[in-house]
Image (cartoon, rainbow, N blue to C red):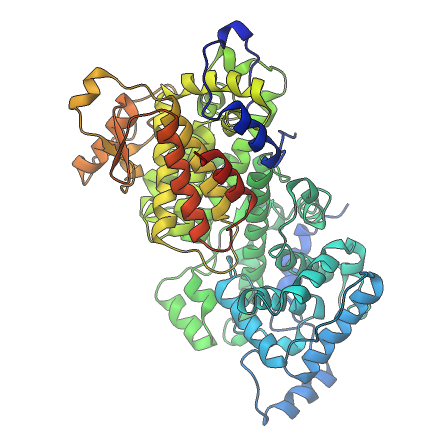
Amino acid sequence: PFSTPRLNNDHCGNTQSLLSVERLQQVQPLWRGKRAAPGVLLIRSLWSKVIQHESDNLFSNPTTANTNQTEQALDGSRQLRWGVDEDCRKRLIDFCTELDNRIYREGFLADGFPTKEALDASVDFFFQYFPMPFIHKATFNSRKTPGSLLFSMCLIGLAALYPESSKPFVLHYQKVLASLPLRWHLFSRFDRRLLPHVQKLIRYCKSELTSIALLHCLPAQFFVSIASTLLVIMEKHGLFAAYLGGDLATQLQAVPDDNENSWKAWARVECWKRMILYVLWLDAAYARLMGSAGVVNMDNVDVHLPCDTLLFEAGTFPKFLQAAKRGSKLVEARMEVRNILATAPPSLDCTSMITLVGCLYLKGATARHQLRGGNDDIWGTQSCSPAEILARDPMGDTIVPSIILLAQKYGNLLQKKNTITLLGWNNLCISLTVDLNLLEIALGRDGVAATYKATSLVRKWSRSASARRAILHASQIFEILSSSRLHGSTFARPDLLLFTSALVLSMYVFVMESKAEDQNTQAYELLQEVDWTAVEGEGMLYPPIANSMGYQSQDPVMTDAAREFIQHGGPISFAGEDQLGGATAARKVLLNYMHLLDDLGRWRGSKCSQLLRAMSDF
């Protein structure tokens, strides 16, 4: 978000606020307090190390004679699905004992260790619901998996499957894992003898990513956590610069392709490709949470896109071959974030689309923060639209065209069935059509005086095409989350999405101006599906270009209504109720979002829920 310009007090004398002075004083402490913030490369040998790894699975320990004997002894015995046996359980107990010996928690009483059945079920949950599948199920074996990694996977499953009984156990060890330094993870006594530094770094990445998925730390704590260290290390080693790693297809072709070894080598490479993308998801998620720029420089990001999920999920070598024969490519294209317009492939899957949406969000966040730095009055002299500001500077002038390209080229991925993709898309567009920092100030974040000043600028913004597009995206997020439920571990935080959307729509409704001609005009219903391919760049592309892509809609009635509304405005309705503007209508909007957030269960009583409740209180 951009800095809010200073306004002379005499310009604000008649400005109203959605909240009373007393309510503003109650709301201000509830705000999160966020403010705008500003060797030898591993990539050069990465793919050869991964291909030559002496174990079927990328994250497994190399097979030894003792391991083979153990496997043979267990062949005839009853095994759980993921091979969690008493030896695995004992190894995890030893791992936790070492953790406890390093950090003393006063008052903590052990509640016992989970059974092997519970641990195996937790691994099963991890594979079913982790947001980015980047560990190969077909070659995974719990008995060969390092304790630090296996335990992190189990914690995620335990937290989801046994939320009440496992809560003390999970919270304790999640905090312990998060507080340990990088050096401990790389050189734990359990792994010291096993792997070279490169493989330990790979394992550290996977272990930390699974651990971070559990964390709900305060925004200010993130950049001093091991998560930021992980991002910095990977970037410095060139892991986001695929062009430095040589021709991946050539390196894979060097492996004989007439046996299972070629499949397993391919799977290890695919694991790493997907993990790199997941790290970018992580960076985008925390940037959204903090309202800041990310860690990774998007202008240098060049990544291998993931292959077809059917290939990665194939349970056997013959099934893998069948998927390949049906046309699934074994090596996908590379994508340069700074040059999406030229390097976008003919088709994408949801995983690649989510990655690109996250990268464009990070690119936009970085540009906004850098452009904001030298001029506190940038909004007062130019525009209330972040997209318009970016369009005027070489640093960000390709962001909006890239976003429009995604909708035009991959519109099939912006359908309601692709929930996570659509949520990310709408959130990205909100970030470019409204200054969320301004809305937060207008709703009491920085006190009474700042509230009145910010509300004047919100009124100016509400008259723009950007504002009308913003409320479409905000309403779409409400509609998506009211008709579908997110399950498993995901970075698409519904509490943050709903809170942001509530701010956008409620402030628009509060300051909206009714016109006499609107009385005879049918209101545009906000909770209807929008064809973003037909909407194109309306409200976001500057200067506006009519029919910039030459797209002809398949449903001119519905899509023309959305585009016409963005262009020309008009009356609106929300859930069938006409919105007439003013404080009462705005509070009703906030109440709708608050009730939906509470209905999601997990986020009832969260900071976002408390804020919405306080702001909507009559």
